[in-house]
Amino acid sequence: MSDPTAYPLPEVRILGPVSVTAAGPVDPTHRHRLAELGAYLALTAPAGRTAAAVDAAIWPGPRPAMNTRHAALSRLRRWWGHDESGEAYVERHSYAVRAWSDWGQVCALAGYQGGVAVLEEASTADLTAALHLVQGRPFAGAQWRRYGWADRLRVDVEYLLDQIAGELIDREGERSHPGRLALAVRSVAVPWASAS
Image (cartoon, rainbow, N blue to C red; front, side, top):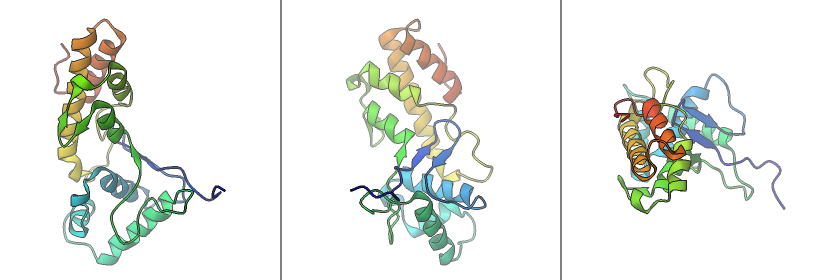
């Protein structure tokens, strides 16, 4: 029997305008900060999810009061909700979260792990699907003074997207559908890359 109060898996999108979607209630005055907190937790390796790291990433500057972080995590837990088995998408007493992300999907499709992609082993269909997830420059539209923690990630994202685009162009040529898509993604999401 399914739980009628269960929510679908939250979604974190960074391959274009930042968007965090969850089905639970959220106070609009907290939405932007909670979206950033959710994105940070969903996109950061477990070793980087400590109280000090969360504080430095989400509340840069003087360390916030401990109850600030706890209140934000409670709000995020309420917003993201739980699955059909009652498991919260934001775990209590830890910084572990479950969410779908467009970046995670690109990494899975491209075989990207630990900073290394084995693009030659990925199918053209998978690489094309990865580029279809791109809606613009990574973290586009992020509010000023937010997402500073994502600077390194932004570089990694742009690098991998450029590599995928280059691989598709090498395979298919600029005239094919995947080749045209690769050139378009390069021009929008990877501004430093050559479009040739």
